[in-house]
Image (cartoon, rainbow, N blue to C red):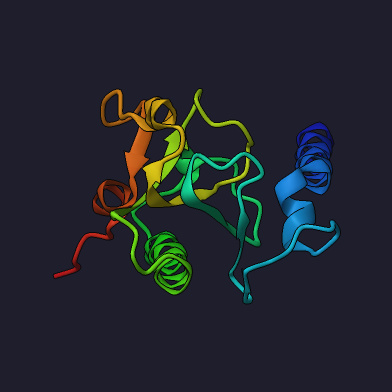
Length: 160
């Protein structure tokens, strides 16, 4: 029993170490020089360092959640992703009101570049146009998933 407890404590310590070294966790804690476009108790938003569109923002949870694979059909996960989209939409409407189109989505493993959940928020067009290739869906569980599709996937079931 003490061995299982020891492994559990070690696993928790390793997870904490991973999140403390995560660049997005550092940004969320305002431990970098990254300019935050939005900050609240659940999420922060900032410009992508390698933008692919007229405007390209990232909205991340303050809590370290590695990828979309950790999200479940729980009210709190659905509320978090909904809030992330609402924040991204408000920022794009403010900063790019005349954009051709807005687009919101997440990369799914193994195509995510940072292991911290992050919503890509685009005011299109893509610049240059070939960057659109990075944001293609390769099926429901691979590649890029549109935010509305992810919300459908994690929407909690109604209780009867």
